[in-house]
Amino acid sequence: MIQQLIEKIKKTKAPICVGLDPMLNYIPEHILKKSYNEFGETLEGAADAIWQFNKEIVDHTCDLIPSVKPQIAMYEQFGIEGLKSYQKTVDYCQQKGLLVIGDAKRGDIGSTSAAYATGHLGKVQVGSKTYSGFHTDFLTVNPYLGTDGVKPFVDVCNSEDKGLFVLVKTSNPSSGEFQDRLIDGRPLYELVAEKVVEWGDTCMDGDYSNVGAVVGATYPEMSKILRKLMPRTYFLVPGYGAQGGTAADLAHCFNEDGLGAVVNSSRGIIAAYRQEKYKQFGPEHFAEASRQAVIDMVADINSVL
Ligand SMILES: O=c1ccn([C@@H]2O[C@H](COP(=O)(O)O)[C@@H](O)[C@H]2O)c(=O)[nH]1
Image 1 (tube, helix red, strand yellow):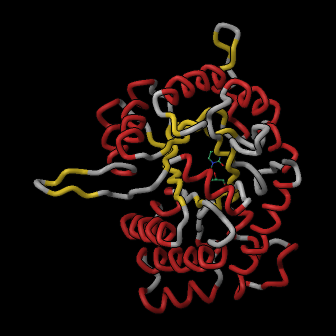
Image 2 (tube, rainbow, N blue to C red):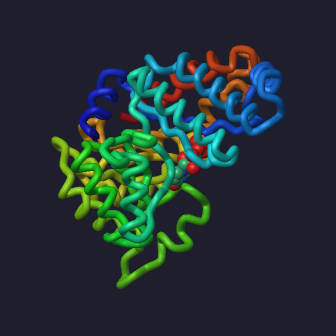
């Protein structure tokens, strides 16, 4: 699967994913109005609005990008109706030729992880029939429970040719609270990185592993160390844009071949029309603002590669 991502990155010359993290307050009035007229101010109405919003953004950016990263929390807040919109979004993006990184940060004891892995990446047996649930291409995984909590995801990657991004050093302000704690003189994120390499060695796909790592753009010094520790691990890099990460901060996430990282921006792209820089598009043309924001992001990142 990682080779498919690399091929799409090479083709688009865009090592990015657009974060489809729709919040109702980013959704322009004309979309909300239409969905509420049809479904009322209900969970169904909200779920329809986020789907319509996503669809327009995907339509306006899919020729420029290799991948998207829907954040499942943004959909789950609307319950089942939200999850239906998550699924519609995944299906639509895949129809448009995009790879989908489901950002669900799953991980539990082995048997429960196996069910998560089946639901998000694999296939479930129902009597004599087999179905795939969310069928995303990649999934983010929380490694806190250790190897038995991660192995079921790795197994599904091997059986179904899927990919993972395991949390190693996250982009948020408190990430150091646990992740930077020293254990035998070394920060926890380095120990997790070594485990990710070990898990990933069983899951190689060409020069890179299908087991990738989440490494925040907001900690450039640490990403430099992690790049050296994990030369064949693809990085999913959140934190660019809205969280303050810049192109210069990202440079160390990439290998010398210009590969090795896919950079996410969610609010910076989907809510671009609200930024001063893109205000001229106006809410009616929010998706055109997103397109311009993608073009600018790609140029910005390529300028440091
Ligand atoms: O370390 C992490 C891991 C995941 N995320 C997720 O990425 C996006 C970031 O959104 P922005 O609007 O571009 O800030 C969001 O879905 C997070 O849950 C992260 O930010 N950091």
